[in-house]
Amino acid sequence: MKKVKLTELAFARSGDKGDVSNIGLMAKSKNIYEFLLTVITPERLKEYFGGMVKGPAEIYPVPHLDSLEIILRQALGGGATCSLRFDQTGKSMGPVLLGMQVLVSEELLEEARAVDESIKKQYGV
Amino acid sequence: MKKVVIGSGSAFWGDIFEPALEMAQSGEVQYMGFDHLAELTMAILNRMKAKNPEAGYIPDIIPWTKRLLPVTQKNGIKMITNAGGANPVQAALEVAKVIKELNLAPMKLGVVSGDDILPYINDIRAQGWKFKNLDTGEEDIDSIADRIAAANAYIGADNIIKELKNGADMIICGRVSDNALYVGPIMHEFGWDFSDQYIDRIAAAVTVGHIIECSACVSGGMSNMWKVSERPWDIGFPIAEFYENGDALITKTSGSGGIVNSWTVKEHLLYEIIDPANYLMPDGIGDFTALKLHDEARNRVMVTEMKGKKRPDTLKVCIGFKDGFIGEGLIYFPSPDALAKAQWAEKWLRERFKKLGINFRELRIDYMGVNMLHGEAAEVEDRDYNEIGLRIAGRTHTYKEAEAVRREATHLWTMGPVGSSFGVPMNVRPVIALWPSLVPRDAVKIESQLMEVS
Image (cartoon, rainbow over all chains, first blue to last red; front, side):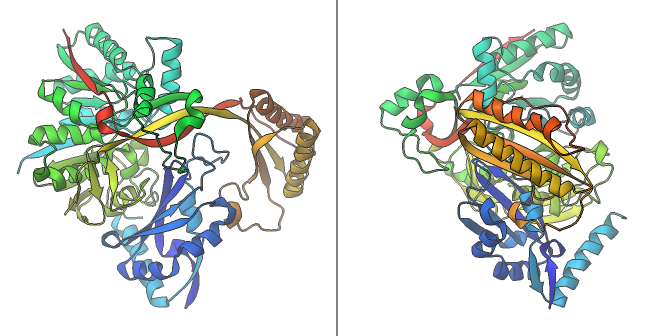
């Protein structure tokens, strides 16, 4: 087992719907998706974001896309038009989530790295 | 199999222009959708219209149509836009002027309006509809009724379809949902109505509309694929080839830069939604948990097995109301001791605010470069940073107090620790808060007309 940041295992992008911060968390493989379902919980999310998220955290699994739709309520200072946040629309919330540390097996980490490598190779980077 | 090819030309007021023009020049699409309206935009446009009855539309529509119409006419592309904003009729009159000025071929302009429910919102309330706040759960709009600045329903594709059927060459709408700009032409081309037999295919159109409606956001913009996006400065806007069976191919203008793959499509499917199984739009409900993505070739992603549910009986309505003011300030501190200087400045400001007796609704002070974006999730290191910015933002009931917040921040320029650096001061801004709600579909008086320009 190894302690890594979520960025090794998944991609994330976030935006806003009023005062809701929504984060699409996309696992780099089906196995990693199954693993994320067990470690990313509403409690863990609330603890990680602390006072940034005043309302509940919800998770909607999207199995066909190996993804989790994460809903953080009352997380954007009342919503973009009245928020005092510099990042009014919560675009940074997804990448911030990718800083969360998780304990993961070497096998899953290898799977994730293989995906990163194949993307680089496919686009000649 | 019959298909409709439709592209996105704009995602918001101020979007980049060249990709739209390049898509039109490519001749690869039959329709282009142009969204210009964000949640706050309607309140801004309403204010413009209140000052001048001939304003209230997105002014960009004039320079944009000047450059686009000669190309779209030549290539037989129909543009569908919600740039009409708070004044779609006037926007159409302005486009008519462009057509005449450039001696273009005669055109029929469809104009869709009636999304503005402010003139009769009290009649709807009188019938017992309370406009419950979907965010906060507040039951009755009574508490803000005297401060409403705008109330617009997100209307669907009904009248876009109607005017396309009437032969419109371009459609100019008010607050039509971004999504309907795409669902409209798809339904029109296949001759679908809202009867049960088309539910899944309309849901597919709703889903595809969602995928492409944010322009570059599915073709390399805001993407996790940013490192591998090709010539991102030549980014191409997305195109959907929508098939009659409800499958679709997502791609972008040939030869353009950017990137479309199953990751970028996935990113956007999950973007700015709540429940992925119930993506509620005025024309249908998309279920994103059923569909499958397949990378068919470079920059070509097939979307299959899309389904969903029948359109809801209510429409979303966005009510904007005046709700205080925001005063802001920004100041940067260099090393040595950048963090200590910023902390000193925070203390100085808090004492000053106390001394002035400012009654804050909310005060926020961020350390730029340290925790402004990461908040409590930030890993703050005890080291000498090269530079740290202090951002001060305060929300108050009165303009006067917000102005005092802004002013105190500027005083730090001369009162602060050595090296305190400042840019251009910011202005106080009024807050238009949003009250998201629903309105019965039948209560919204949607209208449309055909304007013939020759």
